Image (cartoon, rainbow, N blue to C red; front, side, top):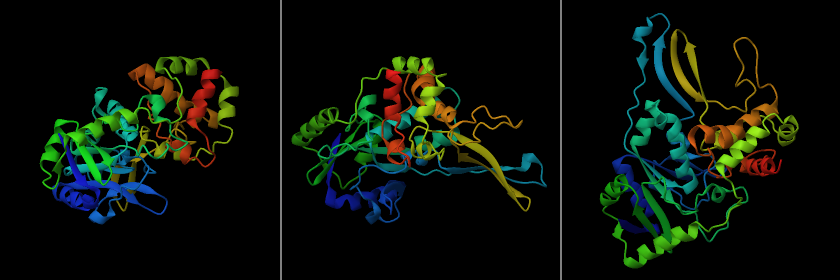
Length: 345
């Protein structure tokens, strides 16, 4: 199913989706674009390259309450926090981010232990993927092509969108996508010429150049194992690192979190909050011992987890080449360059 709508009428589409559920889409902020709930159709802005923070926040909020309790009452009387999730439309997701959801699914339900919070949000969400503009060169930090992701790759989306002049072409990729497109009355039918343009754009997207190197997952996994104890290599790579954690917070495939209790005047809440392996106390034990006191050990953990441990356990690299970690690192540490150097070590 291929539908289309004039880009000038995109606000009408936003309004229609808002009537059917919660709409989350790129919104322009002072520092750039980020996904946010659309309250006014005029907020939706498709004139963006990619968002600062990945849309993983839709499924894994930075802060999430689980249980509310009172310290004077028995544990059995603690009340779980209801999710009350409505139908959600995640609009304008770039291909690398759509791929990240599939990687994150491995941890939150596909590996056998189901996280009900992640699963319920995933089940309630329709993903509208959006191709990169192929007339604009990829940004220097990007390397999604290295990981087999095209600039117009529909994998991971329920509906995939491509701009064609003044129109937005929308193709259903999954049954869920077909259902929502059929319910949007303002969409027009795609013509044979539109279908041809869409298919050619997808093929052209696979040739859109980002930084690219030949990278076999099993080869890099083995290489990182071989140099794991090379303190000289890792210290050189981490010399400038501030352990600020920005790389993990903007990353679409980082999922570390902490569970903490917050109590005030006998009323408390247990919640999940994002954490990061780059933080000094991430591995601090109750005994006071910390097995990763040095910056290089923490950077090594992050890189090896994505490119070695994850490959050994699940057969896939846990990185999508979106470039955010490099783009927003205050000291310009580049994971792509680390992998390049590792291959040469």
